[in-house]
Image (cartoon, rainbow, N blue to C red; front, side, top):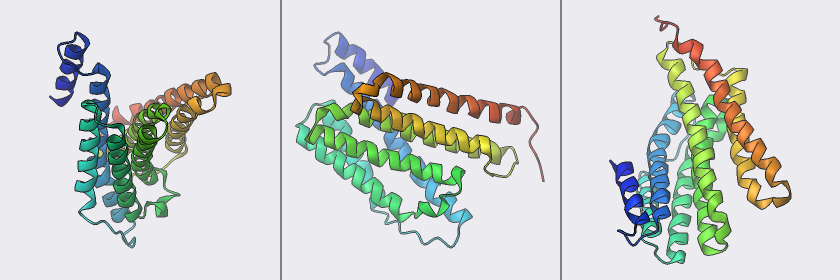
Length: 240
């Protein structure tokens, strides 16, 4: 319903029924996705880590989640209705800070050698980075705003979707949630795609090359995901 409403409003804005830039609704929709990733990713990442590594000492003040959510929604509203750029910049800075503090409290770095675990934490890190880039764009250099979109979409969404889908298919098919070379490869590729896409506008002499690398890595990441898991989902579930 939310996405349908944003879509409808963007069309109404395009024909001047609404006196709002139609692109603002697309950005608001993206931030709504980020908000959902912050909630769902922020739930599974620390819980999965704690289940597998019970000795990890996590510090997760409950106030951080609502604070991050309020900051994200505020950024969404401020952008949608074109509030002062400094207000947007500081709300984005607050969102990134709350997400990062929450992430650090999970101690995810202990799973650095566990790709299927660390990818969930990397996905949340991309959310924080996206908000920091957005804050810098609105407070210092507006040219950085597109970089935040890539951090949210290619980085955060790419890492979290591939990570969660891989774990879900393995787990629900009765297989152990173990890493292998193919899984590790496509998780690395999706992050190379995000990094190279963000670097593209910053390294104009290599714009075409970096854009090609980003696109190739993105396609290869999802292709390898399909190669790895299509045979698995076509097989019967393994029962104990």
